[in-house]
Length: 381
Image 1: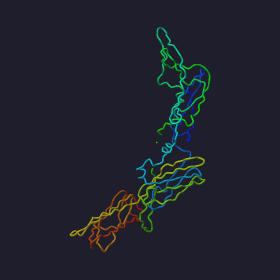
Image 2 (image 1 turned 90 degrees about the vertical axis):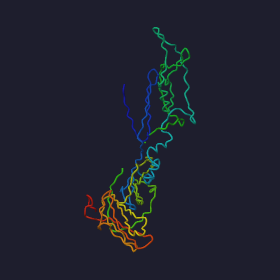
Image 3 (image 1 turned 30 degrees about the vertical axis):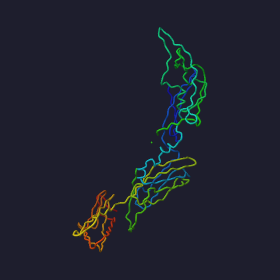
Image 4 (image 1 turned 180 degrees about the vertical axis):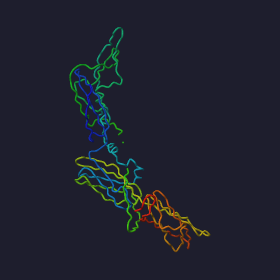
């Protein structure tokens, strides 16, 4: 016959479910089988974490938004992506959390410090070989054949019953032990878990979103970048009775990708872990000044290069500040602004003639401009 069982898979049975099915036949023999199911590594407390926006400029404000069970307490961490690249084991995940469990499944019979406990063998049954038509039939033992007892032992279950759960052992004429069939009778088994006397078996269980719009400030603000932490956020955040929280943060000056995740605990739903989310801190374009190491007579002129690299389409102006220590002239025709297309480098060069000896300071200003002229296939707003 065939029948089906419906099992409700919930977080309570994670990470592995062991199912035992058995029946008792009129001959007092117990027929059993078991199966093991690895479940999804999830938690009852559903935690969600997101940055708004998911991209931003250094020193700008962002919001870290939480959703979890009402009145939870969440611990949140945000670190530089390089930290997790160097130490991937530092990233908290469902697998790493479940690996902390002292027991994932029961296996075998053990008492104390790994001392195996084995039921004594029943007395063997004497059975003489059977001779039919000149052929002698001797009971033999299936080497890999399991009985109900071995299935229960594999699950770490002890059974108290008057039924036959073990294969009887047969003593042959030359005192060899064989396996035979079960004897008759009636009974029903009952199974219970072995308390704190077990052998633990270790089970082998193991995005960016870009939607940022940049606006050109009406006033030029000079900012000195000086905040470069490896760990950006390390805080406790209480969740409201509505199951939400909002943490306002300031993006550090590091041009990098920040990785954040949180775990929460609740008196009602227990532990929960958020997926890892990202925030990308970036600059719209970068400026690099390439200078000769020194200028010595009779070469009294040099050409410093200014390399501008853009991540988006920008219209920029580039200015080299005047100085009494040198005379600077653009190598190419002077332009009011330059179009920097996405992932394209623009080079601006000056012919500089020093007027004095010693170290000379060069000051370059680069500013993004609003323009209705197309830059690439876009109009810079």
